Image (cartoon, rainbow, N blue to C red; front, top):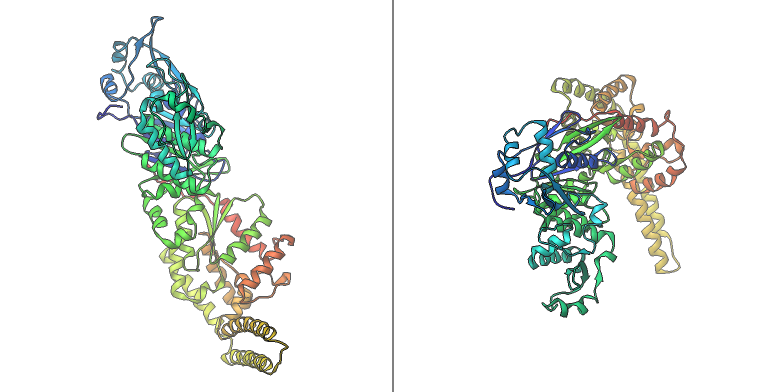
Length: 604
């Protein structure tokens, strides 16, 4: 490819909902399975390489920055035609699928095309340009053809032939082959070498070290035969090499890559993502579709100068949302959001944000009982204050999401105000909701301090009695005594948590939730809960997670670890009942996710 001011590229891609995306050097399509990511690539390939493509399903149109003249195109790209033995002007190039040669016949070169370029914006010109020149500009790598593009093939029979990537790798010289081997070694721990020791045959071999091969192919042949053929290796390394060779030696301006992570383990997908990001640049556009968060993390490890478009489907309608660069940077640079695997939610139909790991495990298990086929990502926010932040982050990225917090989110007026604003409650609605919180707080303090002191005193007496019994007890061996003391200490840990809870005015509300409130305060709670739920922020009406299975025989407790063990053992045998908790509450959460529609993209 020659240097020139003209650069073939996609200027605009108009999606079927009217969203206009302006592809940059690297555009990544993300989203759940079966929403059309691969179809978008297929339609772009069709529109850029064929004369009269079929009407698109997901694309309305594309815009290509066509060259102002034939001379501008010829000075930038090798598109020269030649006069063959049959008396026709022809052009030979590797097909966009990178398998086999594409041979095109056309007008007299160059005079016929010079006239043609004088009316460059007609539909006829656009179609003919795509047919005659698009195949030399576009590389379209699907999961299927990546395994074929690097298979053993015949060497080129003439200087114009370009029917395989291995022929192009051979013509690129030893530097390209050495760089390829270096990249494969970093990802798979093995080297790769182009074997051209058999006349008229090209193939790749894998091995530990090819640095001592003789320069003469006749001398190298018996050594090469000791190494395994790449064609006999696993799909992962073959797919990886298919992508890398394409980027290293093929001089195309537009690369369409479908699920490059296919067949790869997470570390290799991460490595491939970083390599793809390194290969994107001013002279080429890369548009890829992926369902791998590891590949995306690899891409983002090279910086956040990446365009990410999320594709979703609600009913029969597709929804497209470009992820704001600042929101993306927030996820990548914040250790809390990174460790919480927030980025994974981009690849699910919806996300549920909860306070802790035990919440995520329980709500996931219960959701499967209600909706076995629901494709949801459960995110542990680490605390209730972070739940609304992650929820809003997902909503801004076009992910249908819900956040769940325990009832005690209401016991801190300042934190509640922050949560309400975080989830988008308008300022004029915040004040009355905080007034409702004041009524709930007043009801919580109606339990007399004398009653709470009496409860604390009883628990302290019980703890003291157990300690005295342990001190007076004799054991048959030191080991037996040690086991008994360790057991008592574990009991004490649980008792002291209960003791701490007994001192708090909100203890009853944490264990019972809404039903512990008088009628007026219940109405106040309902007002807050309704306003929050409308924005995907749900308050557990039962109190806290550890109170949700009282009706099923698991008493409320402050011992989260013990509770979640019991809950997860019980969950498989439970029959969902939308009239009872937790099913009633969880049903409202899932219904919100399934029926909500992310805001339309603001991409123009």
